[in-house]
Image (cartoon, rainbow, N blue to C red; front, side, top):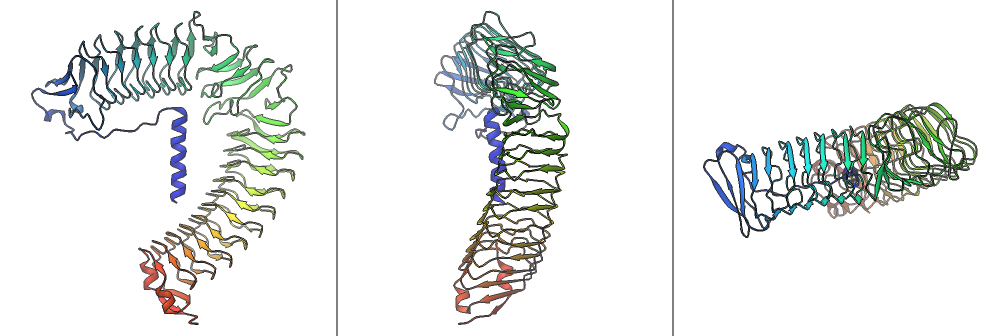
Length: 608
């Protein structure tokens, strides 16, 4: 269980890191939540030569000369953030510190003095009531996350003095509809305007020389990115698509690009996330000049849902397409990407050897797929969430499945694994909730993490003796599984492998098994009896936790360690059959929360 939760959390953090900022709060001093608890004027220091004063009306004034302290573990202002409605930063103040006004949720107005040169990291982040901001005077740098998650911010004016807009500076400013960039801006940082969902247009001045990755990602209403003709680094076309100056690289299409789009001839490469949009784009035409399409360029988690075809110019030397608008390499040995609206049955052409990563991902109207003899590999997520896919014909020539290849194919009922396959990859059939049967050949030696996780209709599975390992949580929540015979050549039953298999009533554990790891059979509420072979020496944390029906268990003297909570909540456990003496029994290291096990009737079967 712990590993499954860790994996899910890790995926979330990875996704956040790839597309925007990971946000961490700095601990703030406790303060009353009711601003009316403060009366009169209060004050304090906020720099070597700076002071702050807060009056009854919620006006915070900062005065003095020099830089402002960052808000951190060393410098704590002890000011009541919940009472601040207006901030006035006087002339003479040269910086706004990191995190200083973070989460001032009543703040609605900010006046920045003429001598301020930089706005610190996350300085005004999560100031939800801030509506407009004008940044001019001497400000040169807007720091990372400076206005992150200012959900009420609608209008931003950035003056000519500003040269750098930092990473995530305005990320998740979901109400932002208008932004004016001054003629001095040179750098727009990574994810600077990520998830500004109301922003419809943005004009890039001639001064800009760098636009970071994902700068305009998830701007759902964005109609166009318009670049000054005087800009020497970037350019745009009449549909608001962003290019480099020479128009050899297509960098970003606006989210609201719809209908048919023809990539201009002369473009040789497109950005990895250039087409990661949620708009109404229906067809993409690829010119003869395009030589590089990054993996996943036309696959987006919840976008391009109306794409019916990717059409390639016949003169293109690298790529090609078929009559269904499916993208291939030139000689059609690799199937690269199918459009999301591909529907019904699809016959992969003869000669295709590789189905690339996410090639049919989220083709939710696809019902049947036939792969040709000679195909050898199916890439990661190749058929991910093809929810209507009922039938797939896999040839004997296939030897490799990528992780998640058939994950969440919820209409799939049966699959035959070819005899050349050596491992069932990680999450291969994750949450294939209608998968009832699977034929595993004796070429398979390994079943990966969460390979059949959540296959809630899987009732029977026969393991060949060739299998030497089954990874954690491989069969978690396969609630219809009734009987399991662990392969004879395995030595470890790993964490959570059969946890949540509520229908499991019979488990056969072979003599080679040396340890049963944590949570291996937790929540197997149908188990009534377990026989632990004499080869087992340890049973891990909560291995049989919440096996409510477990009545008896047989173990041998070789078991020296029973970890914490192995039999927690096994209230029906009444009988322990022990192959060993009472002296042997007393040597077992038994962890906490095994009360039912300790109170059961112990029968000593072998005292020799």
